[in-house]
Every structure is written in C-alpha cells, then in structure tokens.
Image (cartoon, rainbow, N blue to C red; front, side, top):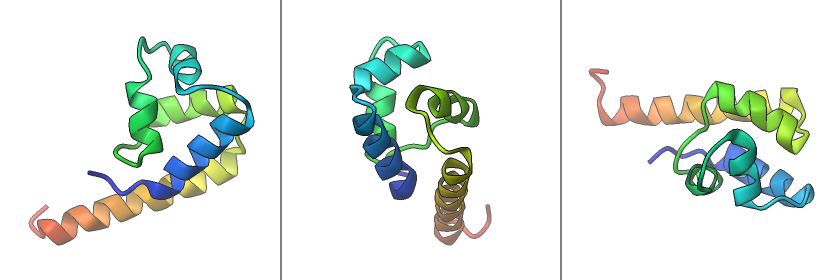
Length: 88
C-alpha cells in the first residue's frame, strides 16, 4: 500500500469544500464507481498524473500545491519501496 497521506487528505478536503461526493468526482472523471476516488482519499493509491490534471479542474485546485504534495507522496512511496527491496 502506498503511503499517500498528504494528497489523500488534500483531495478529500477539497472535494468536501466544493460539495461533491466521491461518486460525483468519479463520474466527472468518467468512472462508473467511486472506488478509485475512495482509494486515493484513503491513501491506498495515487491517481495518475493525467487524472490529477483533471482533478485540478473538477475540484478547482491550486496546481502548485497539488504538484508539491503529489511529488512528496510519490518520493516517500519510492523510498519505502527501495527500503523493502534494495535491489530495485
């Protein structure tokens, strides 16, 4: 499981701030269920870069803040993976 807590909290809070449900966001992204949105908000996975770009529009997010959080979480996930398997 990825440790994507910063972006998870950020996405959830901003979704709530604009008054959307996970289902609303999922439909805006073209998904039939909210499963992916739920996984991102629980920190189980990071959305793809393409999806983040679409989330910026749907949730009216600050691009610089999203980029910083996404990179921090991605870096930590990579570092954790290398600690588990130094041969990666």
